[in-house]
Image (cartoon, rainbow, N blue to C red; front, side, top):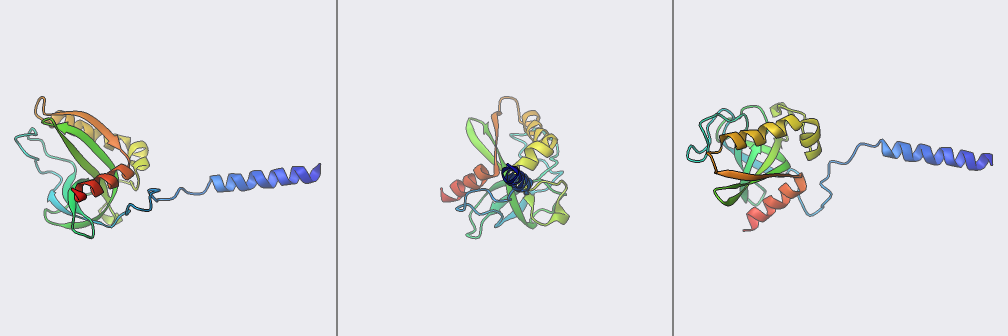
Length: 174
């Protein structure tokens, strides 16, 4: 009886300790790279986006073309301090914002700089972005909802870093 009790306590302790282990930063898909991406800033925080589509309100985010080691690219929003146009930055995708723009799909990969000195928020995963920094997620979506010209943008949806990486792979394979 005592032996069973001791085994039960030891087993419960082991399960508790393993349950407290920090979750892995991995995306869970070994075929997708994690942060081997370089982004070239095309629009810095404070700039205006295309005036034919967006109202003239400055962005609070940087927009860049993100590429992998093969030089293939797609558009990304970098949540960081203001960066210079043309600046190259190593980034890690943490999410994907999809919406319709003039009846065609628009995908923005949401990224954060790998260099922590460029970070403006503590975000390293979609969980951090959507749960711990949900206000930034809502601000970003609200910026697009309120600054797209009337009837231009619709059907907004959010997706994890896995979907962002798959979108990057899809964009570069097209």
